[in-house]
Amino acid sequence: QIQLVQSGPELKKPGESVKISCKASGYTFTDYAMHWVKQVPGKGLKWMGWINTYTGKPTYADDFKGRFVFSLEASASTANLQISNLKNEDTANVFCAREGGGPDWFAYWGQGTLVTVSS
Amino acid sequence: DIQMTQSPSSLPASLGDRVTITCRASQDIGNYLRWFQQKPGISPRLMIYGATNLAAGVPSRFSGSRSGSDYSLTINSLESEDVAIYYCLHHNEYPLTFGSGTKLEIK
Image (cartoon, rainbow over the protein chains, first blue to last red):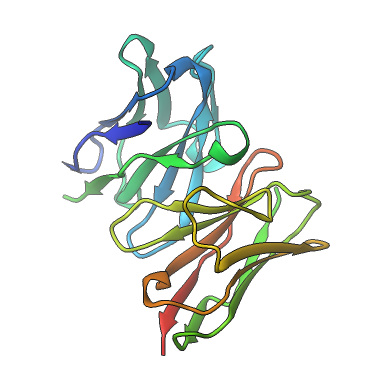
């Protein structure tokens, strides 16, 4: 069955970097793009952008340009999100979500990775 | 960017009630509208795709509809397991935008 398994929670200090992974299984990884979604605790969902898993080309929402990098380890069926120069406002649960055709588009999500930024 | 205005933000209802949540799109998004259910500590679950189509495994008491730029999620006969936050999402163009969420609770 299709699964997206994300890396575990992270506790970081302001100014540090973090890398979150999203490992896919149950389908051909390069067939479908991967999206990233941010959720501040107690708040709503915010789309961060997506990465073409075939070409590796990332697209970032405006609020996530600069310190955010989407990347792939295609041989490991894994999409990564790196955030540099962490700020307190980066504290959030981050989800990966798979694109797909028709009914499958955003039907599959990772379990979320909580990133906590605190001095 | 397309804005999705979701209402209400909070919806207290009784078991067995019929409830409706609405999202209004600031521009034409066709039927590129999805509804998600999120329970505490759990990833969002796709409920409706293409504005009106029930996702796999979703109970038939859920339905989606469209009237112009207004998109609605309706639950017929509310059950306790439906308590959650519901979000709409347009995916007509980038950037994608979620609605602000509706917290559905039992009175």
